[in-house]
Image 1 (cartoon, rainbow, N blue to C red):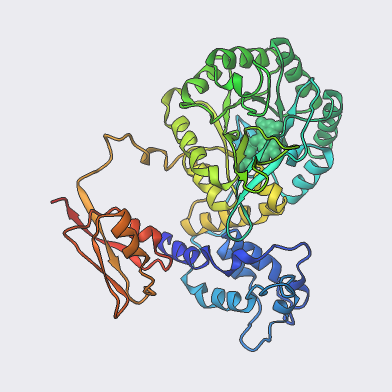
Image 2: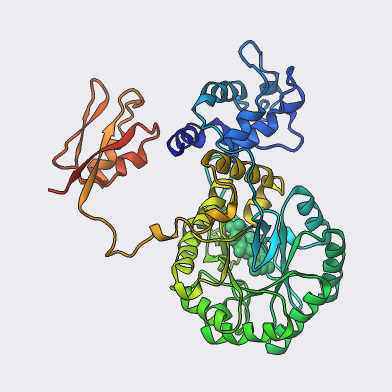
Length: 503
Ligand SMILES: Cc1cc2nc3c(=O)[nH]c(=O)nc-3n(C[C@H](O)[C@H](O)[C@H](O)COP(=O)(O)O)c2cc1C
């Protein structure tokens, strides 16, 4: 199944689908003569929920003159998305998809014993900063939210406060913010909690808090519990604070983490998560300090100190606030590998075995989410993808994960937590005695020669290129099996089949 689903993913990874703007009330949907929900199908493909897209594809485009493409908002200014071609390809490739082994799966899990209807939560940020936003998110299907960090000191924000690095398709690859904490008073936020608790009794409300001293941590935790929070999350990691003993400076000090976790625990009987910073070499000693202070789990990662770029015309770093900028927190898909590394470190530490891990950092699709689960996250949190695409991404996250589990025959998402954790080993334990040679699939190869260029200048000069046939040829005795050629191939035309024991 894995091979097939990967193959299917590959067909769409960099495809036309990424040009879709995922419009509000998609004009392509309304004009389909066969009433297909085209916008939703494209959205499912965009978020790698291929099975969901296939299941929804109830139109036959063979003889259609594609009014959907004429309706595409891009048709006036540039080429419309080639919707017909995409849908025909989906139909053609539908047979590749694996079939379901079981027909019911259970996505419910828990966070330190508090039931979650699914593992997906909003992470503490602007996406969960008001009653109305949380209400809409809960109604959309999110299992809960970590509310925008509550504090009792005033915030003084900049404008603008975000910048981004983009893919070719305009989507954010990485995102920088220089935003601080909630701009509501503690009392206003407590009223929001009370209302949410009453109206959404089954949703999990995580109160993210930050105090200026032990007393404040204790008081905030106590107030949040009284107002109906289900879990307390200590923000030990905001990179956008100025003062000592606030935000990230706490998360870089085991002593402060232990002290303020203990202070928080004094104020509440609820489970307490310590939200930790990646702006540190090793998170484990900090997590252990949180555990000593009484934390029940770790939330990670907060954002990474960054400068996303410098405007080469104005010569000011981004985002520019009246000609100046500051280092700010980086998030979004680009940080996922760094987040996964920290999750892996935490889940492989035996002394942290009894701690819940709430994983986050760059989750956009069900596949991203699954990777966090496989490495040990019992719950997941998301901000940047929601800022970009809205709460509706939950649909494809849930459906994609459910379909995966049905095809794998896994009935409970809990059975997936941490199953890949032990595959990450130390440098001494990795096998270094075999070479996995690349094998070219000449039918898939389009003769671009990029494998040759990379191998010549960045590899071991182990590929020859026949300019007549425009096909690569492996020079086996030079190849070290590094797989750079495979990674640069846009056609997935390089497989790994031949394995030999090292010479
Ligand atoms: C605009 C913005 C505001 C944020 N505000 C907070 C906050 O108030 N408290 C907090 O703990 N984390 C905050 N974060 C960090 C997120 O909760 C999350 O840890 C981080 O963005 C990584 O997840 P993501 O890649 O899904 O965004 C903020 C992130 C962004 C982008």
